[in-house]
Image 1 (cartoon, helix red, strand yellow):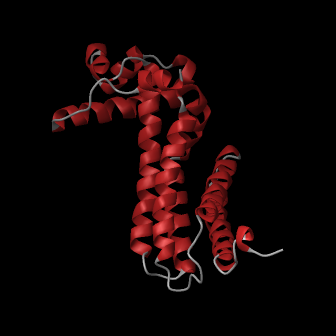
Image 2: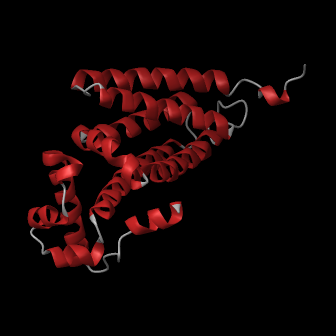
Length: 218
């Protein structure tokens, strides 16, 4: 059942030519604008097509229903966040853990907070469009990149465990969501970046010098 539900959200086709890609971009941006202006309840394919300057028939070439539109917008948002984390990790390969943590945290927060209104709106609709599955997929991308970068750090006494990276990423995601839910004022976002960097730097410094509890003796 779950696979069938997720499949119904997938686009009917992917754009190949530049013109088609521009049309899809316009439709997705229009979806965001309609969502922000009226909420998911008032979002319809007709309103989105009108906002995008496209016909409903053109929209249906790519997306079968409004859930598919929202799914595509959330997928793009999460992919952009994962891409930002991957780029930060690539840039930080071979650098100390503290520097790695700073780059990764700042890239993650900046990607999430670039458009706080969009992030807030997408959190509200995620559960109804199989958002948790998209979040898991994007999270896995980010965590794999983090693990690879951490293994290259010259001051990592032990290779980082996947669970440790999962906890670090969970702290980043949870704290960012909390700030978004609280309004995400510019001052709050600045504090979030600063405090998350401190938190992750301290955790990495302590965690990579500890022996896994599973390996400790009685």
